[in-house]
View (cartoon, rainbow, N blue to C red):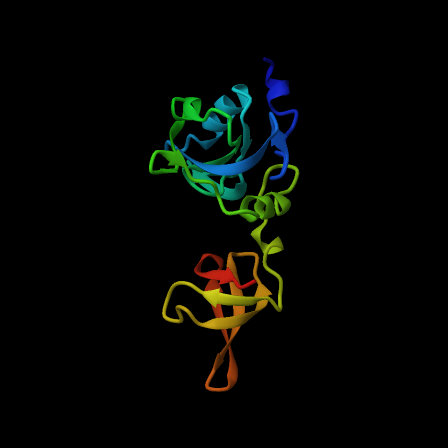
Length: 186
């Protein structure tokens, strides 16, 4: 199989597509450290559908500054499997540590989570989480001193911080918090 053929279908099919008549679901694959791209290449060569969200980051080494694309979730990528599709080869793939499992069976990601990540990914595979967050959305803080507080998203910054309005003592108090410390309320 040629290298170009591996990346022909860059973005995977959404849930609802079938594999041999069965509905496909997304599963989480844990990889070895810094081996996400290697694992993705080897899974693609075995005809598994994968999704590896990436982010741009600046690397400084020997007084040289470069911007590189790296995995958004360190040591993790996603693979689409149908119910009857064999998942055993995944665990012995180069770069893969294991498929995330419970009681001997792979655990599927919740419906819609990976699809929303794919929708927020550009053509280069870079995930833009600010697309997922919009001003006016109701959010819940999941970590820090304001844990479990509800608020309204006010502004999404480019540095990874967001400004939210918390209702404290009948006043809207603006606070700035990291994106990874909040969740969106549906």
